[in-house]
Image (cartoon, rainbow over all chains, first blue to last red; front, side, top):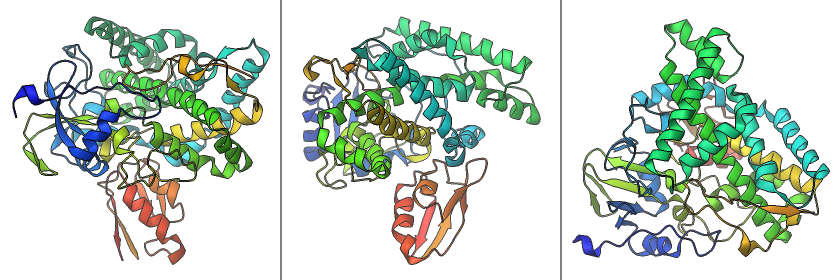
Amino acid sequence: MSSELISPLSMTRTCPYAPPAEHRRLREEAPIAKVKLPNGRTTWAVTKHEHIRAILSDPRFSSNRRDPGFPSLSREPPPASDLKKLLLELDPPEHGQARRTVLGEFTVQRTQALGPRIQQIVDQHIDAMLAGPRPVDLVQAFSLPVPSLVICELLGVPYADHEFFQTRSGTLVNQKSTAEEVARATGELMMYLGKLVAAKAQEPTDDLLGRQIAKQRETGEVDFGDLVAMAFLLLIAGHETTANMISLSTLVLLQQPEKLAALRQDPAKTLAAVEELLRYFTIAEQALGRVAREDVELGGVQIRAGEGVLLLANTGNRDPQVFENADELDLDRGSRNHLAFGFGPHQCLGQNLARLELQIVIDTLFRRIPELRSAVPVDELSFKTDATVYGIREFPVTW
Amino acid sequence: MRVLVDENKCCGAGQCVMIAPRVFDQRDDGIVILLDESPPKELHPAVREAACVCPGAAIVLEE
């Protein structure tokens, strides 16, 4: 195939709730297709659920984001980086070992024990909204601070510094950021977390980072580089994901009041609703890529060693072979067979924390502010179309 | 139905514990514990779902 025939991949949505129509066409006509990325490189765009699942489970595909073949949606080349590899960049066997050091912090039991504190944080933020002026930006007053506080307390990062790390993590997930901006934000965050980890090594604290230090001490030397890389990943992952899901879920439920009413009548349905909202938005699809370590044949296509694959999980999550009426938000569907948290050994570590936060938020927000509504027409809202994690920039609400 | 789990493949996502808590649990380090290797019939749909969505393909069913 000559390069002139390879069409550029657009991530532009015509409907804020649906993946680009072009991606659906790809899924129907060429589910593994060569496309041109904004940086001019080519990659394979993968749009069917079964293929995405297969690639994410296949050790012949690497997660190494620093490989030149790894698909990037940024126009800038990735910064040359001497930083320790993050968990999400590692391949087996290193990945499994590294993941297992922190897995115990995210068990279902440990996560559920955070429920009462999450409820308290949610209630306090709603109290403040109710006591404050209207309209208010839901993103700044609620969607962002709630998960931010939860991940800070879990990690042991002082929330008082939230402006510092929120702006920097915002830069890191914005694909319009220049390589220089990304490098600066990364450096500043690493420096900040390095100091924090060093302080915790001096004075042990009972939080995730403190416990990791204690655990490393038991078996040998404390590896500061490892801990800083872990803190960096968990802090960003805990911020930019749940926050955007809270805003988007609130918006779509306000837009579909009959579904919201049914949900409010029976809170036992919230967990299934959360699962469906996760599928429906699949906000982190742009973070899902791999690079082939060897030649792989899949779905009648030859993927060569060194070539990248971009896994368009949002479109995969609308695959009619897996989900009936896939484009419809069906809060009773309750299917967990979606790719919103990825799949395979890298599947989101914090998924059950995210589920719990969303469950508490949805149950509480509409119960405590039943008159909640958007303060602006929805077509005036600005969506994060140029971010690794999809969301709403500002969401003025009133009641 | 006979349930088998492969601890080496388990990546501790905890989906099985959420879906079928009478059949699966997690150790303190996050790795799966099989509570019931031949679960009663009424749990079979949940166990099948757990096996289907397990990200590490660590749950194998013999039916």
